[in-house]
Every structure is written in structure tokens, then in C-alpha cells.
Image (cartoon, one colour):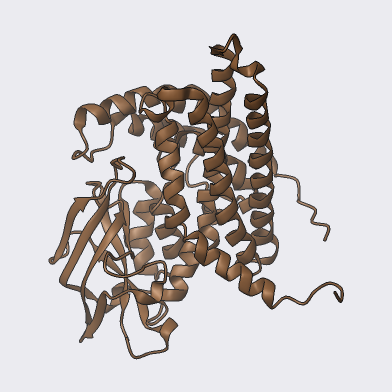
Length: 406
């Protein structure tokens, strides 16, 4: 009833100052060069704009590298939250520049949690070093993948190998030429209990039978790293490539998609803050119906509502992070589910208000608002559909003992 958050460490405070400096002096000024490169290269080009490599070098020099993983950063989740939020101001640049971008973060967390020593040496170490990138292949076009038990891709044991057959889509990161490995989820035992049918295996990208197909746009935006249709046809990998235990894929997916994915929520707050800052700037520059927009009562009300929404969302996010730190992932699971619903909703409202005060400019690519709206609308699906989180929360509430007789 009386959560008392511990004060941040001196290291966390120092890193927060360094991150602010990194955003102001390096990342935000580099966005124009990034956008220019991507526009000139076109949607079919997935090479990394050179400016990102320059940012990575600067981030490493400042010590802003792998901050998402406590074993590397020595930060708690609560200490990491403000840092992740700052990277959310520049979604295309800052997370990757600090080696804190999805899907690599989730895959690294998974390898760290359940990977063997050999798997960590071959895949985790180069991912932590940023010399390769990875893809995550779970979602399938033929089934409702919000329920991971629906997955149809087969992973069948054949001697010392697994043979994989299936079609995935929204395979995050697959178009990037640096993507060297996939984490693939499929069924190893369709006859087992429903939550013990699935397993996860490591599949090197160059394995025969792996075909990376078309990149799927999201709200008209073409991601540099890609969200592809990926086919696995008689793909053969050693049994040693199993992640964790056979039949443990569903639990591993929950670990990967669970508390660790609160990082998306943290970054979303930064995008919301950027949209609100753009709103405040815009309404002080524009005049309509004889007076500045900032003097319009309705506009002022929307600004106030945006501030309330962001502060409420941040409080929920930080509370969830604190419980992860203090009581563990299982104890925090319902708070994490709440944050995954509430924060994207709040941020979308703030971005939508920003688009409205920008008028026609707000729906163009001349400002980042349309991109931010599309990303965070998709977040209500890729971080687990709202309906799944709400069902989980309702089930918990219906079984909770009341504090007093009613």
C-alpha cells in the first residue's frame, strides 16, 4: 500500500545526464541525415544509414551501451525507465545507437535467460557487441498469433537434428543485411498439453531452406530492418540449437514478451513527450480566428489533458518496473499488462492531439507525428493485443479477494 521507490544510484543519474546530452548533441541533429539517406535509398533498401554507425561510436564512448540488460548495465528496471524514455524521442535512431533496439533486446534477454554456454558465445556475445543483428519469427499469417498456442510451424526431431517447416510474417529485423540469426517458435509436440507443444530454436539466416520474402509495410511506413514474410522449408538445424527445453517455447515466449517488453512502454513515453513538446511549440507559433492557438481555450485544455495522461502513464510504468525489481517478474505481470494497455493509449491520444494542432502538416512525413502514431497504434498489437491483456486483468480481478465485505 505504501511503495517507496529507492533513490537512483549515482551511476543511473550520471547516465541520465549523458543520455540527455547524447540526444541533444548527436541523435536529434542526425535525424535529417537519416531521413535523407532512407528517402534516397528507397523502401527496398535495408542498409544501415552511415549516420547510425557514427551514433553508435558516440554512444559507446559515452558508456550508453546495452543499458537494457541488468547484467551488463548494473541498472534496475526502474533506473533504466527514464533512459529508455529518452531514447523514445527518436525511435529510429536512439534505441539502435545504444544497442537497445527490438528485436535484438528480446532475443538477447532470451539467450541470457535460457541459452547454453555455446549459444551465448556464438550469438549473444556478437549481439551484445553490435556486430550482428537478429530476427524473431513467431507470428504467422494463417492463424491468430495473439494466442501463441495457435502456432502451426512444425519443428520435428530427426536424429540429432530438428527439421522446421512453416511460414511466418512480421519477422522483425529480417530484411536487415546484418541479420545473422533467427529465433523461431514452432510446435515440437502437437499432442502434448496445450502450453507444452511449442519450442524455440535458433536458426542461422544462411541455413538452407530459409527464404526471406517481402517486407510488409506498417501504416504505409517501410521499416529499415523489415517486417518480412519468411518461409522455412525443410530447414535442418542441430538439436543443440534448441533454446531452453523442448516444450518450453510458450513459457519462453512469455518471458521474452512479458516484463522485458515493458521497455516498449518506457520508450513510448518519450514519443509522447516529443509530441506534446511539438504541440506546445506549434500553438505558440500559429494564429487562427484572430488570436494565437495557445490562447484558444480548447487548445489549452488539450495540452493539459496530454500532460495528465503522460504523467499517469509514467507513474504506472515506473510502478510496474519497481515491482519487477523488488518482487520479480511474476509478481509484476498484471502491472506490466496494465502498462501495456494504458501507456500506448495515452501516447496515441497525445500524438493525435499534436497532429490536430499541426493541421495538414501533421499527417505528412515532414514531421514525425504520423510515423509516431502508426508505430504506437501497431504497438497495441505487437506488444500483445489489448484484448489479451484486458482478459488477463479481468480474470485476476474476478478471483481477487476484496479488501472488505461489500
